[in-house]
Amino acid sequence: MDSLVAVPACAALPGTSLVRSVGAWRFGGFVYDEARALLRRPDGSAVVPRPKTELVLMLLLRRAGCTVSRAELLDAVWPEADVVDDSLTQCIAELRRALGDGASMLQTATRQGYRLAAAVSWQPPG
Image (cartoon, rainbow, N blue to C red):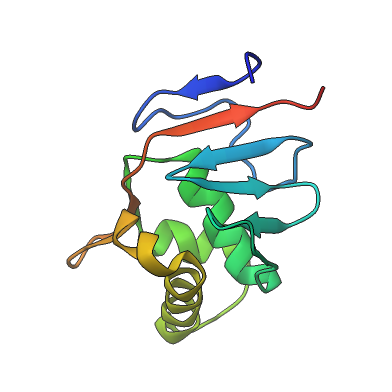
């Protein structure tokens, strides 16, 4: 595990596009394997989020500690598509269900957006 790279809180990471990378995010006892689109819970059980929910998670992980606006999430996850806020609300609800007891890490910033309030590290392959 010495290959873990700490991700500074609220850091704008280079290459924050929502293209999958090979490696894993670790946060709050969870491991998100981006290449496999697999979220492993602290108890070892696994969840495969729906594609749009996965993109929301990817952006929140890349911007951990920051409030990501609803507009930014909608633009990143549904580019050039006219979607309603409810689509994002459903993705957030799905993430909270997947996080279970860890759902408090996914915070709502009233009238602003959402924040993943957790220490996050990136583990490159190998």
